[in-house]
Image (cartoon, rainbow, N blue to C red; front, side):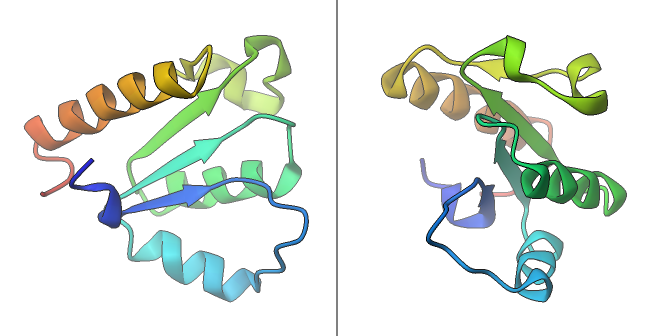
Length: 105
């Protein structure tokens, strides 16, 4: 995915310790944010809200739609079955955003 370098991936990684200001800076400078909502981690939901507040295009991903929490359940999410399916869905979604001029190459 050639435009993946412009995308901030937001996901939960237990051993990772990231300072909030670094996360905010990454979101603010991203062409788009891809949020993996598996596990319903509150930090990821906070980062999605921050992305929306900054009007950064945000792609929501989840493996099990029943895991969606809070007000996200009313928003469009890409539901994936496996990693290959995820790659296909995400590539198509980022291509659509690029075609619409929402993100650049």
